[in-house]
Image 1 (cartoon, rainbow, N blue to C red):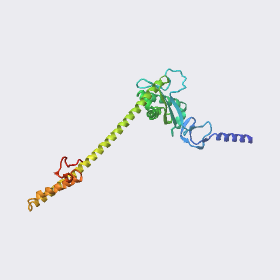
Image 2: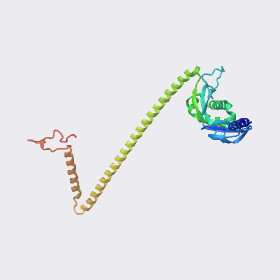
Image 3: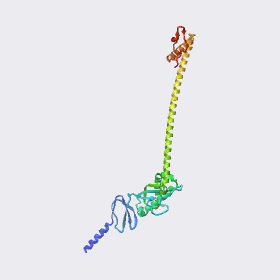
Image 4: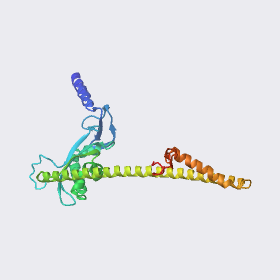
Length: 309
């Protein structure tokens, strides 16, 4: 009968080993005991739980980044008149919008994700489509096509996360990349023509604005130059006028002193100034001596002796 005990011991040992669980890096173990969820989570490594039939351990990949495509699908074969992701803008135009949501399990919510895993993608898709439809409906088609990829991205991420919170999916949206915003194929050529014309008009407007700014800078520089030259000229003229006034006052004082001793002092000043004037005129070639006009019959003044400058 010993071999029966040996067999029983082996069976019991094997049964006990069913409680040994290996949790790989990037995973967390969710433990249920007789179907009741336990609060603690198992980290990476070997864990020893009660054997099969008592404890059940489900491993959840908490570091794995997953993605789901939301909106327009180019290979959609549903045959619907308006396929998913073909949305109506605020000015009653249709646009195709497609986005990619990336997400992973939120820390400490592994159990929520475990129980909802089979409906996570579907709920994210519906939530993302609802957010995109609301955003597109509040804008014109030009605004959607021109600014949609940049402006829709943060809105889609934040509002989709808020939309799924009541469902306790246990996931955190990491990013919401807008992959496609385009008009439907049957009107795409017309939209491309309009976009080309708008781009051309924008280029011309920017060129005109640059030219205006350049001309304005040149005009401002010219005004500044003229102001500086005017200020320098005014300053110079003031200095010259002040110097002339100082010289005049100095001569006036000399005259008032000199006329007391010399009654002909004013005539003397006049002769000195006239001599200086004639000397400058002769130096500049404006007057000349009359010697070469003397002849046998005396002074011949058929022409004036003054030279033209």
